[in-house]
Image 1 (tube, rainbow, N blue to C red):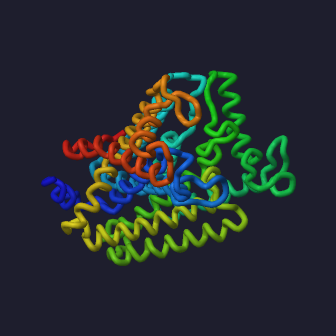
Image 2: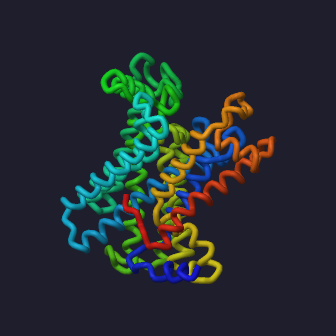
Length: 408
């Protein structure tokens, strides 16, 4: 594509390309792990941990929220320079969050539009809430020490609630019930109560796992902390060339990201001894561990792209271009993936029964006839997922060629 190298090298000087590359990698991996050909035959690292512990898949969503936090700082800087008032910025954040939430609800309703089965929680709603909360906080203060203090308060408060708050009807964690019991923890109890109330009043609201939800209400507290840690990382990036004093060099920036990543990762593993790493509960140890991995990923991308200018080489332009395309309209890519998935599951072949004895869906037909060929394996499931990612890439590529960047 003749326009590819030009587009990459002529990005505005205030833009941090490593953030764009990391965002693209993250959203592509998010689609990959969400859409295997056969969920029963997915490689272990391409599926979530059953409960405590982690896999590579468990690092994807926090990485995206981390990037959301970083993007908040970079966006605020450019919009303030254009003369936008804090009131205008706050209104913009509220409008954008509401838009993301509405899009999520529409996707949840498709294709049957059964309002009684509407899931109010989810990936996009959590992105909307975390973006709004972190954005408003960053409007009030953009000092790293203040943001880190807020992160500490959020993580310790969540740990105290989950460890020392009695769960009504079940008792005190550790003493009466196991710590972080899947159904008897405080977060699950609150979510069941909230959805029960909504079902009685407005007759809608369900939990993803029936008795609990991985994107529930209480666990949004530490998820906001994840987003704020991304904002702190962006403040560090802005020290380069004196955007924030004291100024640092690009090499110092990369080293700082690397050291911070190792420190955060180690802190998460240490806290894991008392408060286990758990993605579905978004535990405080998980926040630190995942943020450490995000910082290490950002350090590598920053060194390759913003320091070594790897994307300006012939090989580098080919290797980084797909991630820049994906990252340029990340929410669009996610929405397209969800829509295509729902469409394929909506299509059914009543006369053809699948392995479970139910009519085969469009998803199942494509997987069984083109990939599994009657014998499902982890490799076949991965091959389907990779092709699915490639298909979701096409709309983003078309938008990229037209220089259309959808600001949801």
